[in-house]
Image (tube, rainbow, N blue to C red; front, side):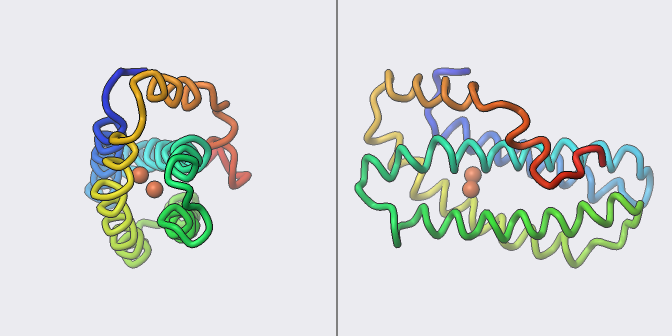
Length: 160
Ligand SMILES: [Fe+2]
Ligand SMILES: [Fe+2]
């Protein structure tokens, strides 16, 4: 993986995921097959992003700051659970070929927007400040080493 700063890599992934979700929303009432493809890429990508954060990035932040219980990463983990619930609600509608998921989409976007902003303003920059280039390379290696099954099959309906 790249030598880019953590904040750059993770912000780029937020942007990439936002674009996939927009593509799903724009297409779902025009070309459902294409919309579904965008949604599947979005869902896997978001699950991967969350696993990167929960398994690699947050533990590093907690180690460096000495803050775990009651700290910002705990809030982020709680929000990830809400995000996953919203994602599954939309996923069910997509599986039924039902484009009427506007309310669920709205809720997901609301949570995600505030969540990503907090990560981009606070967590990512503070990680970049405290880690060395070597530690950063280690984080990227750890992210790369996570098996796909961790984010491809987490809800047991990976063939959507
Ligand atoms: Fe997150
Ligand atoms: Fe994130």
